[in-house]
Length: 212
Image (cartoon, rainbow, N blue to C red; front, side, top):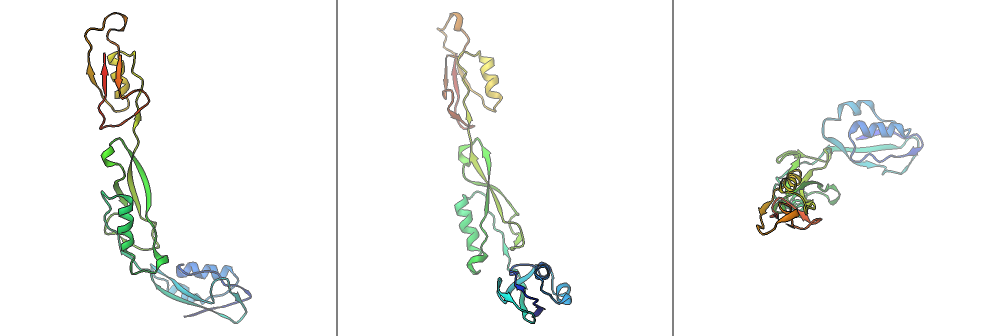
C-alpha cells in the first residue's frame, strides 16, 4: 500500500503500531499519509508489519512511505496452575515456536507470600485466565508464584503460657505446651524452653513447642 509523501524528515519506526498510531507518528515527523487509509484500514488487532523506507531513513519530498498491514498473531493462553516459573515459561514459549524469535513476550512473575513450604515456588494464579486469546497488543501474561516467607519466631522465654500463646496467635501460629512439673518458685508457669529458638524462621507446617 503506498502511503504518504515525505517532506524532508527521518522516517519514524511504525512497525508493530496500529494504523492510527502509525499515521500519527508519520504526521508528527512532518510526513503525510492518506487520510482515507487511516480510517478505513485500521480494524481491531491490525498492525504495521513492514515499512519502506526503514525507520531512520532520510526522506526527501516526493518519496513514498510504504506500509504493509496485517493481523497480529494470537495464541491461546495455557493453564500454568501448580507449575514452577521455569516450567511455565517453557510451556508458554512452546506456543511461539512457529513465530519469529522477536515475537516472544516472556511471562511476568509476581510473588505471593505463603507460610507453607509445600507451596514454595509453585504458580497459584495467572492473568489472563487459561484459553484467553492473547496477542502482542495485550498486556504481558502474569503468573503469581508462592514465595515462602516464614515469620521470625518471637522470644517467649519468661512469658506466662497465656502471654506466649497470645504472641503466637497474633501471627497465626500455635504451640504445643509441655509442662515440667518439678519447676517451682518464681519461674513456675513461665516458658523455660522453646522450639524453634527465638529469631529462627517458622511457618505453618512447623511444630512449635514451649515448656513451662
